[in-house]
Every structure is written in structure tokens, then in C-alpha cells.
Image 1 (spheres, rainbow, N blue to C red):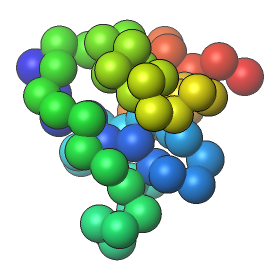
Image 2 (cartoon, helix red, strand yellow):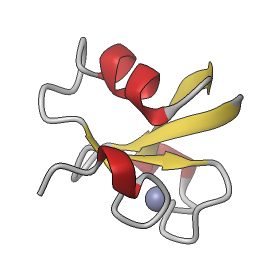
Image 3 (tube, rainbow, N blue to C red):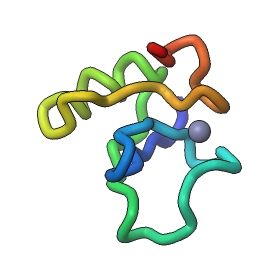
Length: 64
Ligand SMILES: [Zn+2]
């Protein structure tokens, strides 16, 4: 399990330890502790239609 956050401006989903995750809590929304980024994307798309994996920490789930 890992903790996932979505960056509101570009709708990229980060793990909590990603270097690209904004330090400003206002800029992100916590998605929960989930098994993988695919589950995080599924959860996020209810609110963020263009949710996408971060190319740094979730490259396997990043759609270019
Ligand atoms: Zn990231």
C-alpha cells in the first residue's frame, strides 16, 4: 500500500514520497492509502476527469 495525492492544477497523481509532489497542502488532495496508482486514478476520476499518473513516481500509469 502507498499513500496517493493528486495535484489539483495538472491532475497528476503522486505517491507521498515523490519529489514532484507540491509541499503546499492546498495544491493537492489526499486520495487515500491504496494498492497502486491504478486504484488511485479510479478514485480520482470522480472529481478530476483528467487524472493521470505522475511520470516520475507512477510512470506505468502515466498517459502521455
Ligand atoms: Zn510523482
